Image 1 (cartoon, chains in turn green, cyan):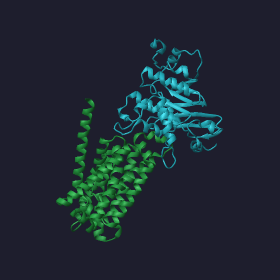
Image 2 (spheres, one colour):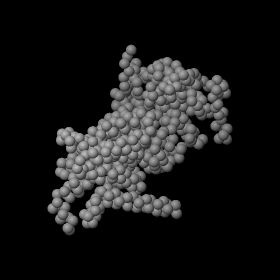
Image 3 (cartoon, one colour):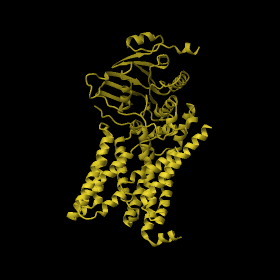
Image 4 (cartoon, helix red, strand yellow):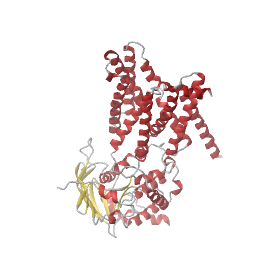
Length: 282
Length: 272
């Protein structure tokens, strides 16, 4: 009862509980796509690479106080730049993608750490980007998150048949007169934008876990893609709310608890899978 | 010279049963004019050199030739997956030139992620995907796919993951996808290479039926089946030599001229 009362007394708890629904929506739709196409390294590289842009803009902002140089703008600009680079890498297939992604990953981190060091004072903003804090979401961000996730989900539903086949057999879409390069560009762009949105809430370090664990657990339970996306959404939501309650009760940081609960479900699904196979054999 | 247009108008209105008659396409030709193709990094050795031919509505063309002679390249040129280095390829429909055409294609193999969670039903229905917003499948699409799966006897595997299928079953799924596109022009790139004798016969019997109202290009090494169903045989080895299929062809002559090492298997004797 105490917990439920608190929700209505403190607005920020209410906001973050609402935001968890939409974070789950994003991480199950975009995450499913990332997992089946093996794009998780791309998501990792972009999220870590963003720290460079955030750090650079934070540094400039401290000295100039020009609104354009707010750290989140830096993140946004770097998101666009990275998605263009990755698009060209994927399109041409000439460079080794994973090596270039590692470069993006480490340059971003290097820039970020350098500018955190150079910027005077305590950089509360930057640590928030690194580890995230769902409790710090304000009303503006919440509304933005709701609109973005609903927009992306509608887009995902409308284009699902196309991007599902795109991952399986690109040549087939070329035969059907689809412009596969444009499809690829938008896929990369929306993955990057989602990463950019989510790191402000869950943090750079934990974002890949949010994308991969629920989907891979759901795929262990259900092989059919549409159902597994729905299952991954439910898993995400349930484990987020369980973790929220636990973190409230024991005064623990929220994001790591969510990841641990999700991982627990993943282990459970693995064990259930084994038992199922064992039963089938006998 | 007339500008090459796309065939979108015809594609939009076409339905599964019959493209040609509904759109009043009286004659349809595929024309290769002085076509050459070579890769950028190997300009001295063209894959295909100065190829000229015409395919008419209702033809059954078989393309034979040794490994590396450019059979698959030829198919990909027709499909516009790659573009010719020299020359031009176009469809002539009612005296209008078109660059592209809705073609049902069975690739020799497809490169796919072995863990991709997709079922045969979802693969076959992807042939019904139209480049038209929104990209949903209709009830009719599902009915067509189910009837084709029934026809090829793969209904029992419709919900198995593609990764768990045998080579032959995968091949059948790809053939079903080409048929589901509803096109009256099919290109089959070695459709029977993975199949056992029994299934090969089954596929060729299906082709025999399809021959009546479709134009088909078949790439195959299978010299024992090919001459029976083809109206023309193309022998490909960089250049192209066309043979009208006569009743008294001689298999050994084919293999001698083109240096192709065909297995001279007579399937009638094997069955006995």
